Image (tube, rainbow over the protein chains, first blue to last red):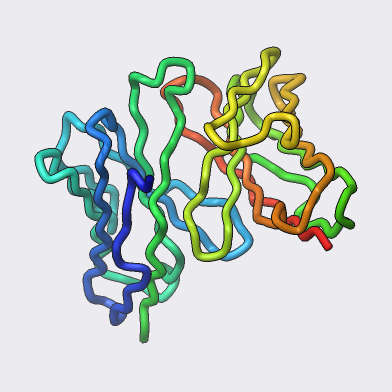
Length: 116
Length: 115
């Protein structure tokens, strides 16, 4: 079963506008969330993360929002740039996984295209 | 920043043969390494967690006898796909972390094609 879902497989945004990528999860044990950016035939690159004790984390153009009650997080990119075009994955982790504390469950990804 | 390499970047092999993929942490010691596979337009699926010096922990549904993982040192883990079949064709990605709670750093991936 897909515990982390990204329901939009693709998103197209104009340069300079805001990109909003969404992610939903079902496992209430998840308490740490991450966003990764991935180009074809490359490994994911870490973007930003958030702990469940927070509802917002910001790093430059990237902001992640977490709504625990809705089991929903989103990544905002503003302003969007053509170089942001890539596949974005959200991932979740549960600190209670003991030895596998870093074990990540990934969403299905959203292809972002930023157009000129 | 932390760098993780994978070798080879792509490999084509015949059905029935075995293929070894290496994952190295170049500038840090990785107490834990993870192996993922990704099918086209799908999510990264965790296959196994590998701690240095101990047996790998496989996720449900992953055949441990088919996907042999060895984590012999703090900078190297290997994944061997034994008796490969066309359905094993996929993109295999490793990640490494210096410790529990620390960030995972991903390798560039290995494209395996079994003919």
